[in-house]
Image 1 (cartoon, chains in turn purple, red, yellow):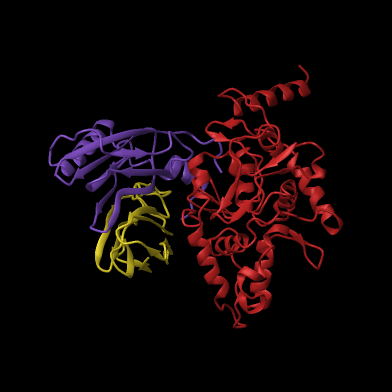
Image 2 (cartoon, chains in turn blue, red, orange; image 1 turned 120 degrees about the vertical axis):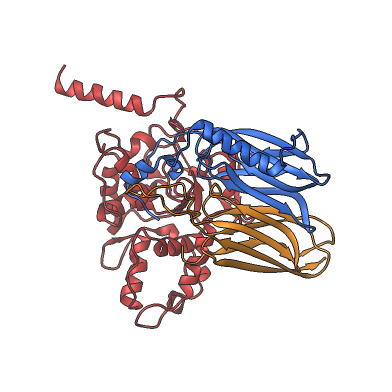
Length: 139
Length: 292
Length: 108
């Protein structure tokens, strides 16, 4: 897919932004998504980690790794994106660990958030701030 | 103020604006002395620092791969062909290499053999003057084969099929030193490219040298400016999340000076490609590399 | 993109019950559905929405992907095996296509 420069400008940096929601609506969407995952249960701390660069060289491709030993399922959110959901992974019997590494789009600086559902049905949560900078070159 | 002084003042202001922000770093020093080596797949050593070619006459004290200017996470993506997001496109290019296309019923492999053997070293000497005395880029040689030997349609310079095959061809020379010829028949093209490199273009009045010679290691907003070496092309650029050709990048750079840019696949950018490639003589072919 | 190209790295052998890393890449635009075209019309979403890895029919991971996953998705995770056999990888496209790859592995 190609865009002219004008279109790319209209589309916004990284081609991500545009269909924007009001901040309050975005926060509500994020909270709803978390509640849908936990069924309203409170999430604890510890036992889950996120690694990501402190400053992303480009918001279109940000390497992120989540790990929660003993988890059955991990879900990742980017609450500052127009749509907060990023991915959800269920670990099967032959998973060698409860770890996933992938690359994600971040529309702006934000706290990337992960939650895990543990084997005993409890939930844990962690967040990590990733700064997204503005590139210098339009090309 | 004289017109000349006004222009100079305006120019200084434009340059100051462009390079404003964080404190000025010293240009032309090693951007990342702690990073000692790049070995792709644990088996292809890449020369990421090399003595500057003689023709630079001290303009750069040492030459550095753009890889050295990147953050650890971007650098890592290039270190394993199963992490480098350009590699599925290399696979597609190899498939195209082996596929029959055109009225003559031939594939690239029918004449050149397996891509691993037939194309090893080719990227390292591109662009190159052809038998008729014209400077040709890799893309020109590919399309000459396609049209005149295979009876197939030329690939568009900047579209996916061409980028796939140039990435596949570049990958066969990874680790080999860039060594483009700049003398003999190439000399006039090289001179033209050199002239362009130092010419200020656009409303911003920036030359290639303004950023990549005088301000490498500085930041343009979030971007850590490199020496603008092209040994890593085609590049998988995170911004586009796609393969980017040399001419596409040149086109974008000149356009960003707010100038009318040059045509991709045109004589001007071919000449510039030769000159810029020659500034990297001695670095390894690294394409397809990963850059932000 | 007409044909998505998967690329998978799996060791040729592994010890029973011992974790090892699998790396996967696939070429895909991952059009997020969040962008508009030049006329202001939303560009319809077209992404890989699910990725699965199984070994001899038993699940390793089952992942749901959203529009926030970068183009040409990279997915890395750990697996283990209990027998000789084959990994099956499936990427499910919004348009109904399924892109597959397999990789044989033996017990060390």
